[in-house]
Length: 445
Image: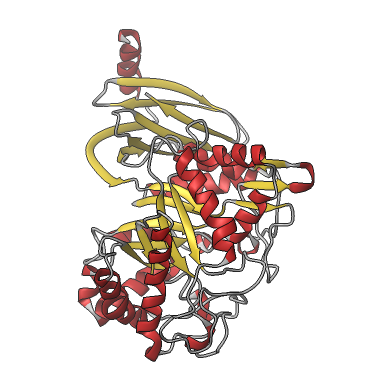
């Protein structure tokens, strides 16, 4: 150690330290990382033998896996279902007498959520609920597909619908930590949404959360369920939040977090997250990525097995967003098949794990390993520490974990090796590292 410290002083004098860590400034606390238990995920897991199912789930949730700690649970159907449905498709059932969990909930969601909880021995599983659409009769277009808006006369009925979902899952032994006010309320109003979706604007979502959703959750014993707004593309969020605050400044007291989707990140700067964090009224709200996948919006359609560039894209975004107040990342489908589905509107994408049912096999994509470099090591409760990165080729972020370890995640996007020097001021720690071409590296000390 003395020899290394002597080297550190020499390198400092020569001014060739690449990355310096300090705890003079500390930033956000990590909530966790995870993925969505869609119908398609469950269908594909169920297509394997019991032994293979258990092994696959261990990859995500077991202590020897990448230790996901969040599961996003769709309320009703999504495009990643075999058909379009809600949890009460009886026309004009205002009292929701016919509300019930679907067969998909019973066969493809609940059993695997329960298995994930059994496998996750170190950390509790954080459940997040999210609806893609209200029942069709409540919407202006009378369809579960997007573009339609929720009729104001049905705001209370829809709040009751979302609350009933929490009640039914509670009967199964599940308590949800967070609830999204709506999946993609902005994209849901565009022709892009050929699947289950619903349009809101900043004013209508403010009204719904403030006067219907928050009070209804609280009145039914779910006052501790945290509400997420936004849940759409980063490029839209700063204006969306400002519009909410302009309309009803008190809305900031009734929501807890801002959800971000990854798909259009290439047309906005990660610093937009820092702007969101600094928006008066939202400084203490968590920011979390709630959906991401390699798809046509990224210029790639369907499954691309083993494509390393996809993993690099993921880890670059993970690091960039973590360096701008992001507190977690929930990927889209946990598992898909070789065709990127099933998907009832052929809106196929890729996933970190792909199942080949005919061979009773599953394959882990590079995105799986990219996610693992953060989910496995930057555990819930970790706090981002200050980092000065003077290397123009290596992307990096640094966190202190609850057990007093420091984690540095590094990414080399280039086709040559770089030798870098890192120092930790408070811990008098110094290390020289060789970062291989096109590589991920995590350092723990």
